[in-house]
Length: 408
Image (cartoon, rainbow, N blue to C red; front, top):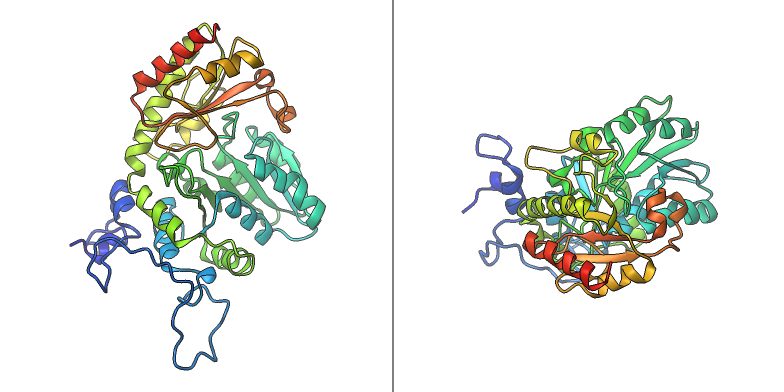
């Protein structure tokens, strides 16, 4: 039976266990009632109160009281995420977007200013570019954060947060986390740096080790890995997670369901194995596409031809890390030709999301509301390809036959 030390991520002589071992054992343990060696799913909405409940803090997240305040499956998953990210604490919410909005609305107040990457997930873009300025009086500035000088020039006396997404969705632009963290922390007032690390996962990159203050993950993607549960995580200091829990979880109701927390915890045990395959297959496919005469461009940080390849290499967490499983590419064809290509794929599924066991592809046309922020090669329509866990050669063959069948 694994010891309590193991379930906390340490050997009996207090040495940290490896990433794979921690992915399996953290957040797990023996159930006291049944002896099961897997944590059960606790689906209760409410928990028994003490004999005299009059002095209970009804907004507390520290005890089992009411499931919106927090629940065991959430806490098991939070312990794992905090450890894998190298954080003091983590809070897990209902989705990646819930984690983004919780971070922004908790840490920013009316009159504050935030800087954010010019290429981000669409919900982050709308939150920062539209919703927060219009509804909450929070000033925001969009910058190309792949150049740290742009971030430095955007800092104002009321700047409180810099938010970057790297690699950026869907253009795979890379930002230098350490350089931007240095800018934030050497300003003449406190500025926090939050990093959306969803495309990397903590297996590939650990932003907190590079100086970031907050790391955000859509657990829906690589950490879950099976395409069957939504969740989002914020890993940072306990002071910040306590504030987020009170604001976004207890009072906004952004709690993750016990079942989804259990599913994600279950899925996360294979994160290291899956990421190695995602990394290897995506790099092989990107190299293949780069030499294909029907391909107009390929964007993947693992390619030496990527403009930010050196920065991406410098940020890798360890020698087994890679550049993740998402790449974008365009074909020498028009709008209809891209759709013909997708419709001729046999193995790769046309669907949104990423980090699943199966490969997913989506054609992004010429009318994306953020297209004015993309570099020129993305303006003629392109494909975002989330490489799954199928055999690499099967995926390459599927791409090649679909290009041929589409007449490109």
